[in-house]
Image (cartoon, rainbow, N blue to C red; front, side, top):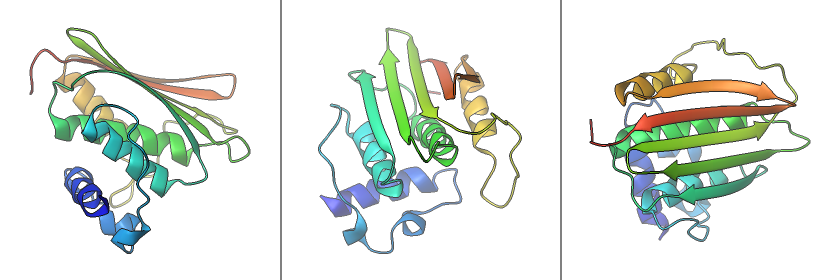
Length: 169
């Protein structure tokens, strides 16, 4: 239900972020609940929040995981920041974001791609609560003995995080 979705959103967004659910929605009735996309509630909640925050963007998903065995706060922070970066640098004429999450025994791979009509720039203007997303993603990638990179190919930005997920840190 909408109240439960909002409650999860507060937990995830407030942890380590200066943003709250109230920054996104003025009323709980503003949240449209979409059908579950995956069999993991945490991922579905994040996808629902982002669909609501960016209604003009076409999202597609490929999620091949049965469970997430890293800290949920860390996973949520990474996914929120990856999706926000993609949505804020989108080509408004072709607003497409693709999210892929794949897991094998010890590795979690999160790839977010978006169309863009801009030159890729990793220099962001840092203000209160804004501009630190890439550093946060890099921090968690290193915390999980993984990697993070962004590249651009033919007007497509590819952001990828690889995490070693054999235990919760």
